[in-house]
Image 1 (spheres, rainbow, N blue to C red):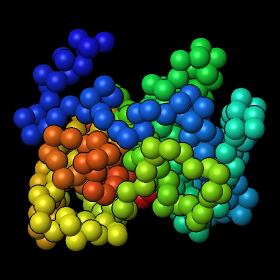
Image 2 (image 1 turned 90 degrees about the vertical axis):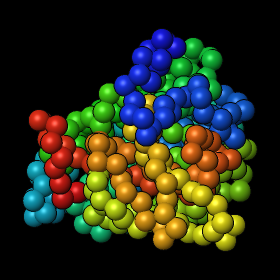
Image 3 (image 1 turned 180 degrees about the vertical axis):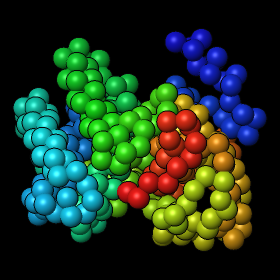
Image 4 (image 1 turned 180 degrees about the horizontal axis):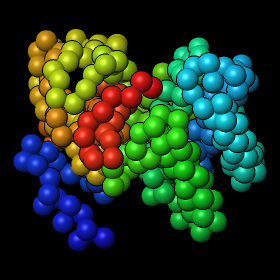
Length: 304
């Protein structure tokens, strides 16, 4: 496997670094299996609640929004999958199982529901890619792997059949750290039971890009709460796609030029270190970005 990673490094551009699971140094590296399974359960609670939002829409609402009317029924099937995932993990964890949080998702119509579902499934695919490293019990590995493959199919269906884009992002999913994924989820969380606290899993300041940001553009980003300590630091914007990361300086006016080679799902993180995207180096983010492309590999803009 290391030989594969080494060969990948040979094709990385000079302005980029390889972002591999074995080279990450997150503060969540000491999670136990039970804690890792509870992170999975917290993710499934998150997803299950989101898909319950489907109840406020009818198939005709999807049709009126220019979406396939049958997509409502497919989303209902995904909703049932997430509930089953919750039940499985609760059965595994028993009295150790975390409780659902209180959530606030931004969807107000079918099209914004589709956009949010894309983010939700991208988080899931990345999370299950990362969670594998914490598990050693064969039954747990099989359970998590089985959930992961279904979540990936959800993401593929949303992107190909509903958004009419590519069913995949790139050759690999990005194995983001659990603190980084928790940061994205936190944007949709109002509060959680105090008993849900997971040691070593942190929440970073929210990183925001303009909604219309595209690869090749110079855009202004923001993160809140901003820390005055970072005013005197040189900061870097990481753009992580699969096992590859492109790193560019963040300008003093908070502008950054998005590399024009990026396509698919990209997680952007602001760090104070140009060679590390560890939790200790993270200043803000990640932000989830989507740079769509057509069947010929050309950039394209999709409405959701």
